[in-house]
Image (cartoon, rainbow, N blue to C red; front, side):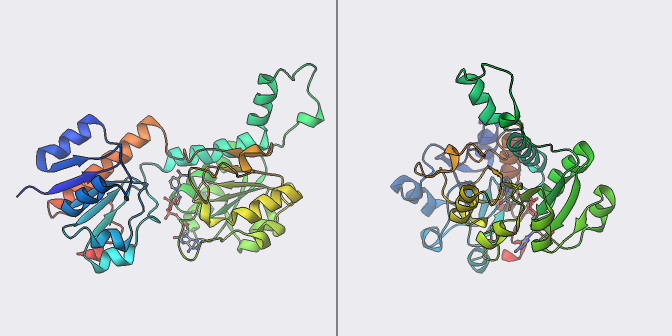
Length: 323
Ligand code: NAP
């Protein structure tokens, strides 16, 4: 019997055709909604899932008796109950590495855009307000030579720091990561306890995964420790930050500005004050969103699910102990 795949992430025609050669594929890319009866009916038949942005709950798994593997088109896997999947013998795979550089580009875009007030001042030109030479009211802050504090120093954190250290002569500090002697040598990075990093950094950039331990890792206490000139960048997950505390810190001037790719609720709650603040650059979770990288991520997920459903080892399993 051919195994069945429920595809709810964007795959190109070539990728879908490759899956269809070996498997029966139910393509629900336009209906990635786990409460939709069509989605639930397909889930009940599926041996494999491929997609992202759908939170997989134990209740959904109860409705998926044949499920063997989930190939997430993402590196973060906070949408999945990993222990529960392992207990049920269901493999979870993700897409590390292929998105690292693109996501780091997004992080550095936010560093530059916030420091040099790019969005605010582009809007100033667009509104027709540029009627005389700009003065101190429009000046920004330098990025080169400043101190970049990385919270999390894994693949993406290191790639952001590399841009800062090698491209902009920044001093790199890192916290919330095991010692990284090779990166210390390559980038001159220095390890700090979190509170010391917050106090020392001109830019604080978060790149930890969202877990029980990192939920609200950065809140009111942490913003109070930062410099009033500090710029806060989040390219990890919205819930790593207490968003209410971030808004308060920006309103009180406890920190200078924020560049945010991720939010506690996505799409962003329309009542949120964040995108309306001049000192906030808010992006719609575009970390890995380039044509090249989204294609590479989907391809990695296709490779993972194909290998796993054929009984082979996938390239990037999250819970290899599941079988
Ligand atoms: P990674 O290589 O696993 O790096 C994660 C870093 O976080 C590591 O330095 C790790 O410490 C640290 N860390 C892990 N658990 C922690 C904890 N409980 N407390 C403190 N630090 C902890 O992952 P990555 O590939 O860089 O990706 C990081 C995250 O970025 C993903 O999980 C995802 O949520 C997010 N992301 C966002 C986008 C976007 O579109 N904005 C795109 C891609 C990824 P050690 O070094 O000691 O292991």
